[in-house]
Amino acid sequence: MAAPARTDALDVIVELLAELDRRPAGMEGPGFYDRLCTAFCSVGGMQRAGLLLYDEARKLVVPVGSHGIDPELLRDIYGTLEETPIAQVALSEDRVVEISGLGSWVPERYADLPGIETLTCTPVCAGGRWLGVIFADRGGAHFELSEAEREAMWTLGKTAALAASVRIATTQQGRARLLEERIDLAREIHERVVQRLFGVSLVLGSEHPLSEEARRRCADEMHEALKDLRDALGRPLAPRALDTGATLREELDRLGRHYKDLRLELDWEEGVDVPEGIEPLAQSVLAEGLRNADKHARPSTVRVGVSRADGTFVLEVRNDGVRGDTRGAGMGLRLAAVEALGRGALLEFGPEGGDWRIRLVVPLEDG
Image 1 (cartoon, rainbow, N blue to C red):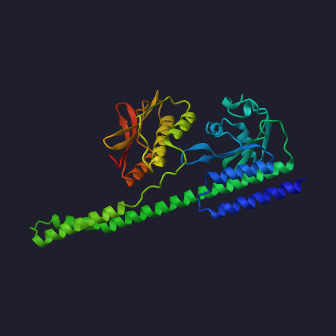
Image 2 (cartoon, rainbow, N blue to C red):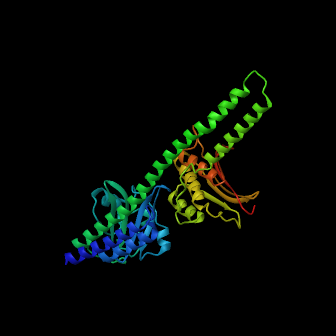
């Protein structure tokens, strides 16, 4: 009986990898992961499966694909490796773990879920790197895996790891290209802008009176320097925030569940929508604001405001737990600020009135 199961698994893997190869690099997408979960259920004899991966953009473990699971239930799933022993064992021992009774194997908030007698956890890891896990069951009923099913599930876990690795490698390549572009930009500004301005400063600093022709030449040089600077700064200086497929409201709900120790207050002005194309940036700013509050402050309240003011969209995140030794913002906010400039927006951050405030201001076309 083992051979047919293995053949099915290999056929599925070949089909999935062929699909992955046809997609642009880093564009495996949610649909791919959904189909992988469907294939996982088929070769493993499962009825429900959910794939969770670590999302570096949001610094969270998030569901990216599923089969047979209510989307509402899937959206409410969150957790960390530290509070999920079944995932720790699956990843550290690189094997499919099968448990009967949730007990202390899962986060306490899920331990009493009714109707789940047996649950499996398949590692999604490659090259010693832990990327995520696949949870699966047979509709809540008790069962025992055969060796063929276990091997097929483990192999499909490696397929998921390959797809996730493509995404990670693409992100790293993008960062390397970005660094090279920044170096080129600095060199170009120095050669084309700074040298022009240096020449003008020498002329203007001369003790001799300037002729009309010299004045015109200085004005022309200043004009050309400003033109070169505008052209150089017109390039994107920061990587675009990843489009998670969620809305700002959905991301606020998810992050609120993740940072359960933070007391969130939302003030969303009625009728205000996130401008088109700004969702990824707004979600990135929100995530940075909540992560900073959780990691670097002890706030009693984190207030999130979404409003419209003077023809602009405004997202503001405030926490009242700023410490006296705060030294400034981290790289995440700085990169988001550069991206905001590239989109014609402005990101401000810093202490204000005893709070730490992050404020994204985006001009509206109809403003």
